[in-house]
Amino acid sequence: MNKPQSFFHLHLISDATGETLLAAGRAAAAQYKDARAIEHIYPLIRTEKQLQKVFEEIDQEPGIVLYTVVDQKLARDIDEWCASAGLPCVSVLEPVLTVFQSYLGTPAGRRVGAQHVLDADYFRRIDALNFTMEHDDGQLPQDVDEADLVLIGISRTSKTPTSIYLANRGIKTANIPIVLGVPLPESLLKAKNPLIVGLIASAERISHVRQNRVLGTAASYDADIYTDRTAIASELAYARQICTRHGWPMIDVTRRSIEETAAAIMALRGKSR
Image (cartoon, rainbow, N blue to C red):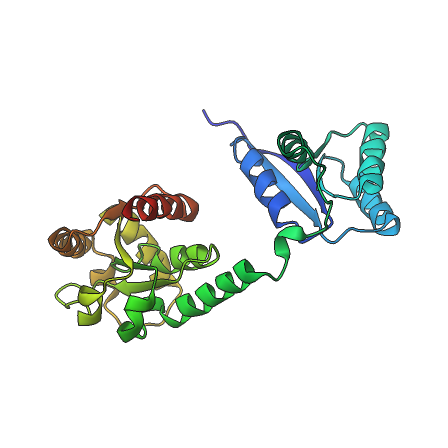
């Protein structure tokens, strides 16, 4: 018998965008299937006045407090306030910085938002994202050899969200749909630069996702065929044949999140180099 789901407040205080903190908080909260976090995010907290307003809000809805604040005075204020309020709090970055300092033999520079500096890596990610958006769903196939990675697969195998996720890692990713009986672009077959990966899933999963898509669209395609599991199985068999014929690796995304699929692809890239 499933336990009823409980709720708790999760307060996330950051002196930057809060992305790192949010990822850490969600990763921890995901381990508790019977408890759901109600997230309160406070980004760009860099003054005592801002912090006092945060304390007032936390006081209204007490819960776990996580923070990434490099200003040591503000960090002490958070620790002391939480202690007086009887609330648990953790500096997410501090244990990591301690290890870095111990290994490197020098203290951290304590730069707010240092991971968001507009350096060459930042512009590389922006360039990858622009390329990926321009080459979504088979667009501009003549440029496919400029990609670092090409994802192929039938409809609803998470090609687009996976491509965007990888683009945010600086990987120029194109994605091309596989349609039953329709040959892939000749430019893809001749491409030398990109790693080409096929995404597949179970017919049941794809049918379920397609049914949700049908409910929210006015497209003119035949919904019965689009969601039919037998028809989907034929599409998947066609996709597998193509990948096998060309020696392209395949990843089954049936039970994978976008992040897990991307991690598997990154592992394949590492092996192919």
